[in-house]
Image (cartoon, rainbow, N blue to C red):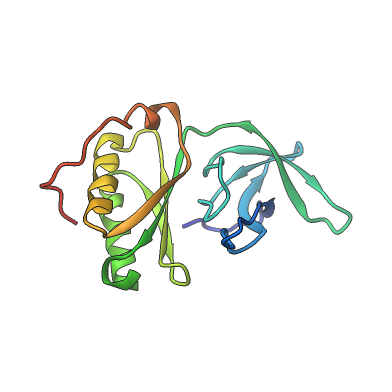
Amino acid sequence: MTNISDAHVKVHFRMDVDEDGWPPASVESLWAVDLGDGTVRLDNTPWFVRGVASGDVIQVQSDEDGVRWAGETVQESENCTIRLIVMKDGGSAAARQSVLEVFHRLGTTGEGIERYRMVALDVPPDADLPRIRRLLEHGAAKEWWHWEEGCVTAAWRAQSGVRALPHLEQ
């Protein structure tokens, strides 16, 4: 989780809500470090925003109230954002923590949110991408979770042909 300092600011992202009401908000606010040149570096993993990941450098514009609104991505971090809705044990706190721990051993960081039974993972480029991908697919097959790619890289996409291994256990 991000350690918030005086250099951190909130950056707001506008989102389109679909006919099913997802995502559950039209704006998501993320912590970022102000780089002082009209850009920020994202410093936490998005729950709902698509196409950005922790570490990305984003152009921002402030409105008349001083609220920073996200614009274009200036520099991608090479991190991936993967989100899971935890089904195992009803998405309990223990189940979400277990998911975080098993993926942490493969090189990710992340956090869980009770309200949506979700876990958001930040997957850096040096994480064990093949094993993460296999575990995601295995857990989905076992109905432990549903998962989606919030923001992925070419290195992640190269793993898309990897098959789940039945011996992986949580």
